Image (cartoon, rainbow, N blue to C red; front, side, top):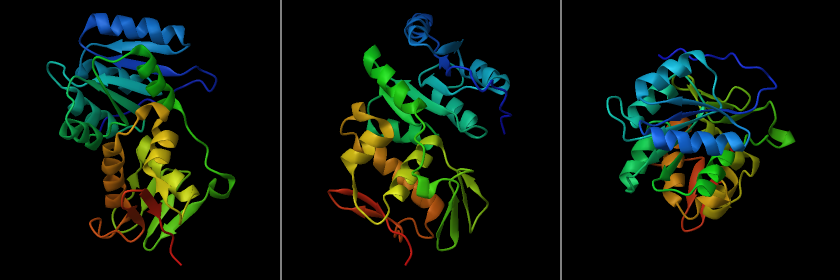
Amino acid sequence: MLAISNTRPATAKARILVVDNDAQIRRLMRTTLTTQGYEINEAASGDEALDRVRVTKYDLVILDVNMPGMNGVDTCREIRAGSDVSIIMLTVRTTERDKTEAFDAGADDYVTKPFSMPELLARVRASLRRRALPLEFERRHLRLGEIEIDFEAREVRGRKQQEKLTPKEFDLLSYLAAHANRVVTHHELLKEVWGSETGGEKEYLRVFINRLRKKIERTPDDPKYLLTEHWLGYRLRLPD
């Protein structure tokens, strides 16, 4: 497992690692993101990115999929094995299968090249945003049958070994928990968890809901708690 650095001054501005083998793209993103007040580091390969993550605490990694050597998906998987840092994948691939592969590797968001800088900046802001739970859920656990969700530790404990929630899994589950027992529409979830610029990309929700079900449901294909409301959205049903 990758050993991740946790050394970070409490008052530091957001630190972003840009990983792309194209020097021109790295330079463009460095210039743009720096003007927005972010601290930027760069890596030209997956191996270099892993070396940087081992020694530096980042708030966000912007990671290109198509790199020589270790590709972005494998790099994402290695980072995610030891860190809950937010990860945005950049790629020219546009199929749902490609997006699902990136999300399954642990990515939180997916931006297709070519992209506009305003779009990327909006995704960056959404990924860096950490919504505080409503007061009634702060520092609390939620039990769903034999599963216990620790919102403070961002962990799921129960039948198997404890599992960490990725940033977007946590954001999605905590939002559903804060609005438990009611239908939360696709549009509302996309807007509140990924940001209003995500649009109608419902495959985001399908992938992340399926991942959450594998962590909290005894039978993910026949869920008891995290329910699909067809054509509308999803509902987290709490035990009676």
